[in-house]
Length: 440
Ligand code: TRP
Image (tube, rainbow, N blue to C red; front, side, top):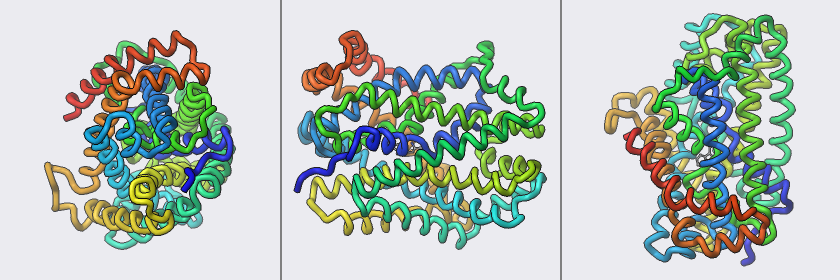
């Protein structure tokens, strides 16, 4: 069986950007930035994304490209059997992330559907919180939406790389950019919008803390889809001649641009209407509807916003499922259609448990966390950083000769290469270890 390849360079870049841009950029980024003092955090996030994020992304892509394998095979190709365990952890991580990611994906559909009537048209935040909590804790409704979201994800992955992921990513990513520009225009023209812009951009370095540095690094991981072999899998569908440094810069540039645009929607609107941006996880699902209720045409903008969140989440969930599917295809030569359906079914069930753990199963906790919290914690704070350390070590110490040749041929300047080597050998593993230890 010949390996699937991307149809074009733009197709690859947009698909990888589609994976990166998701709930991380649109839901997590604004509230984490708000909680960490706005501008200072933005500076940190940008600095990390373009150094740390850049080198790890290239590392993942190049390992996938040279080996032409998804994570398990890719690690085995360079490091032998023992290293393939790292790939397994990545696949497992994909299973676990997608289970709860799809639950939140389902919430976005619920919010689109209900934006069509007046359920959310109130500026009473307490009431909106009640609607949100009532919904996510309900034992039935969120499961149905979770099922719909998962079904859409499989529906795309079934069609494979070019006809499924690449085609849908091109369409949805372009749509996402246009939608977000409409929302930015609306938000920036609100009275008093400038206060929000100021808070978002103006770094106040007196607020800088060590915790923020760690927080920024964690967000860079999650929002650039790094550390579990996702970019490795996408890289494995690349033909030889791709200029990886350039592609990675594009993916990071696009993701960061979306983060900034989302900030320019959320901060001006929040400040203009006198809400508190440090609301936390509720910023999107609770405060945004309150904001829309106060705008002319709020219902329209609400549908637009949640649709955008849904689109972004969908192209990310597709990338997570692809890691798992690609593993079964590479290792066991199973047919794509069958394995897509089977693995998403397992995730569906695990996701049901995650969703119920927010409501009727609240009492069942492990290490003080419900199932949803546990899945999130284990993947973001343990498995992904571990994956980041391992890919850096692999590239820096074991695969360096091959990686170097490949990157030189694809036009990466010698200076950048030497920085990358030091980074992968020492800086990244040590830095990530520090985040992990801090988080544990
Ligand atoms: N980056 C996506 C987001 O921001 C989530 C995601 C997709 C992801 N694939 C991943 C996170 C792989 C970690 C690893 O929503």
